[in-house]
Length: 66
Image (cartoon, rainbow, N blue to C red; front, side, top):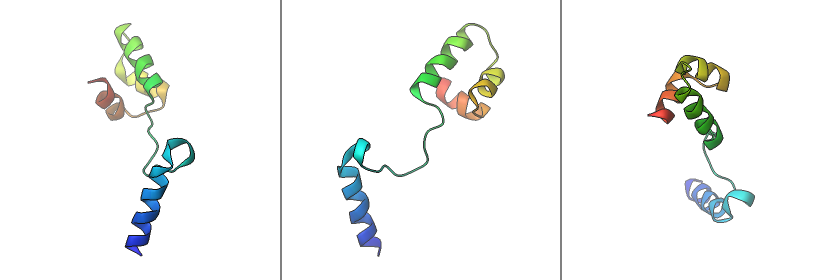
């Protein structure tokens, strides 16, 4: 069963991102959100407020802005 699963996952990856499947949880912080967060932070807004506005946790925001 494990071998068949690995073969199936490899085949899905080979089909690419558009038509294929990529495993794992979807990212909460997109590149656009990171750009917005940096811009607002440079404007002086607190990171806690930024995290609340973007709908992510403070830790997630800190990780992407370090």
